[in-house]
Amino acid sequence: MELNTARTGRPPRHLVYQRLDEAITELRLRMGGLPSPTEAADIWTSIWYQEAHHSTALEGNTLVMQQVEQLLAEGRAVGNKDLSEYMEVKGYADAARWVYSHALEPGEWRSDEILSMTELRHIHELALGPVWGVSPHRNATDAETPGSFRQHDIHPFPGGMTPISWLEVPAAMADWVASLSAITGAENVVEAIATAHGAFERVHPFLDGNGRTGRLILNLLLVRSGYPPAVIYTRDRARYLRSLQRADNGDSGPLGELIARSVLDSLYRFVVPAVAGPLRLVPLAALATKEFNVPAIRAAIVRGRLKGQKGADGQWRSTRAWVDEYQAAKRGR
Image (cartoon, rainbow, N blue to C red; front, side, top):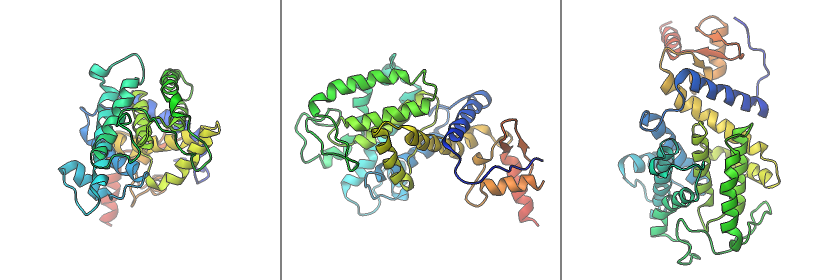
């Protein structure tokens, strides 16, 4: 078999986009596309736990993954954290579940727009409502409850960018919603969504919860465009903030790349292994674990010890059944 002699390290941005395009095309043509939460509850629940934990942790929430899972799966608040922290995760999770279910199956929320202003406000209301009930923003007026735009100006961001005056927010958000129509026909859909995400954060339309709401909307736009959700992990927090600052200065490339990598991670970690089944050839990333990573799988194929095939696109593929067979034989040596 042909040995892959490509240089190791992080692939360049154009290659990340290319791999994502190929992976999504393969998902659509060979595996029936992105399954809905109704069809594949386990996939979406796994992503749901990760997103609820990491997206709130990006904003300072201190619940660990196990506490988040117990809260969402069992309704139990384990540990001695402030009630507001549990409510913050609960609200985000409620909003994320709504996003997942209505992105593919909008029902009565269906419209000609990829996102409506009503949906935007509703997502913020779902995400902020629970925590607001126990710990409302200390500067909020009665007109700034969850789902309502801010009526305060916001201090400059650490990078120096200052959000617009609150008086300009309604018109700016109407323009922002209208601008989303460009996503559908964009040459690079993910980078177009990244541009929209950066623009939303620059407006900062709400008094609180703009980061969480922005990431929820980011995922609604991704799923409606045929991609799985992106989970921005806490380990990528610094890169995410730098990418937003680059987007503030007119360069959405780094943010688009980060989102594309996150989507690929969701695709290979959660979606492909579940929908492909044990006998279907899939990219090695969909078979990798901490104990048996992509380089190790590739090396086993190249040595002829693990069955695999290299496609016309240059990617090695194998199956879950072949990997299990190889690992069982290795343990039996």
